[in-house]
Amino acid sequence: MATEAFEAIAEDFEFLDEWEDRYRYVIELGKKMPPLEDALKVPATKVEGCASQVWLHAEIEGEGPAARFQFRGDSDAMIVRGLIAILRALYVGLSPSEVLAVDAPRELGRLGLDSHLSSQRSNGLRAMVTRLRSIAETQLHAA
Image (cartoon, helix red, strand yellow):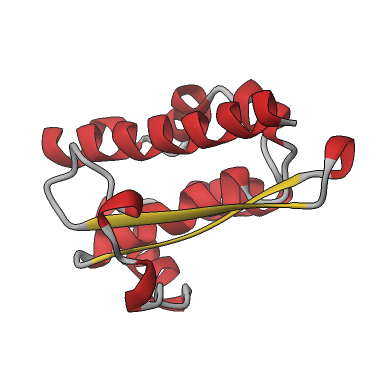
């Protein structure tokens, strides 16, 4: 289950043959993302387990069945900003229960990222997914 935005990224990845081009594309996605305000770069939004500095600020818009998962993020590493942009495409606009239903390893695996990121970057990506799923789960139980 992937969003249209994520499907568009997956299609772009298929079009790009070289991994160098794919890395550039990921970096471009990160550059297009607005930066997270410094006031939100606090310990509560910092993601542990990433080699780079990473912050994710999640919000739930609406209530009950109409609730939709939103988040913004930032990193001091351009490639990681791009990975955050990919995660935004994967999750933003879904309900908290839909976020939990997404098989992130499978969806991200379609991009081939797992075999082309360093082990530290892969661990960081998993830590970001874990954080986002945890926020969605907390919101689901609070509703």
